[in-house]
Image 1 (tube, rainbow, N blue to C red):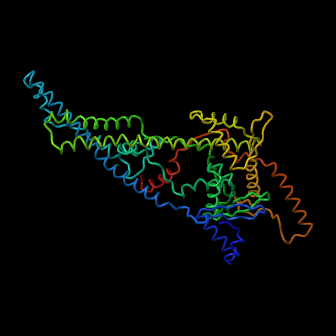
Image 2 (cartoon, rainbow, N blue to C red):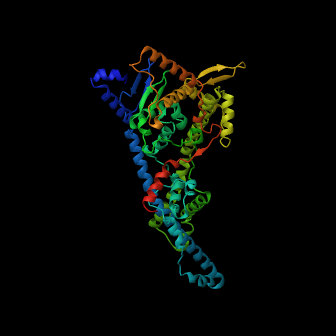
Image 3 (cartoon, rainbow, N blue to C red):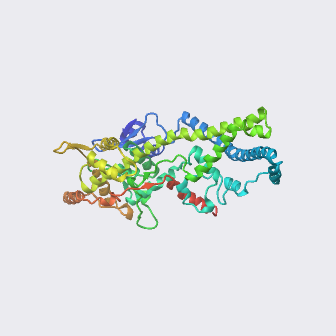
Length: 507
């Protein structure tokens, strides 16, 4: 449903303060957001079913639980099967070769090979350190996630993952970070502090690159979670203030602004996340098991006199099925990885377009054409070729979200301007200067019921002068590195907390 604070007060008969407090709690826990009416009233919008933000559909929960169980079961099978069968088959193949050569040698030279080979007494030894490396490294903690080779390169040698984690990664892919809401909020709270406790949806989009409906929903959640206040600027823009986030015992608050969206592009998802040499070793081990199991009835069994149903099941059927599954799962996953990388590429295109659109709106005060956007993307994403159609689709999406103005130059080329972005930045900067939340002081009074006509007139003239100044605001400081691009690892958001946990354990 939808309604103003007044609608709800009149419906439930509660004091306005109680209603507003309840609405903030609902914004924090349930899907909803705020809008501004033409008359400047705040309108609260919620889904009619009052859907909780943390709600997960039953079918999705069952799917996740089933996938988790099957993955865990196959991982346990992998730990035993790959190494145990590799060792068993190496021993059997060596024994079969010895038996074959021994019979051939006996026929040719009276069994000298057999006498020479008897020194081994049929035993085959693998260096113990390989087994230890497979299951353990000095400072590895059981259950710790493995995010891939780039993450591993940040660890010291003693903390690097054991080999079995790379086996799992080849089959199921590297672990994907699962940040908590608190971890996700950390960057946004830094942004709020850096912007002196005042934010608009355009500013939040600048750093998250979320679609406008998602940004509005997220801003509403922040409003409820962190005691924010929503106000309407003189030109009808919705501005959010967070005075409690700016409160500090250390005096005036300053914070380093997090990177904008165009410096936080996503790397392509890798199929395994491993180094090529590790993948080669794992593939060779499983390939050997597959070949040894598939040829056992014609090579190992006759040479060693092995036969029977039990031997066929244990040494042919089980290892062949396992090895085929081992190779099949990554091939099936490849389809999902390609689909995810198409999504990541689209999000990266959007991030870079945001950089261009914000630069033109806040600094150049100009417009964007499809050709300009395509040239911009080809420069920023040189290693990831982008089609004009991809750029056009992403640009039209931004045009729709920001309700951009569309015009044509004398040659008929479409030009897009985004006045909403500048309006929102000007509105937030105006509120920022008046509230001065970072200094813990109250800004200038803009209205008082005790004013005389002369005082009111003087105050209006002062407000008019400030409005003239606001029209010439320099907003470039709120557009960090507009001509740069960069990537951010998906594990960076969780690694800080992991480091704190490791320190608390004394590692």
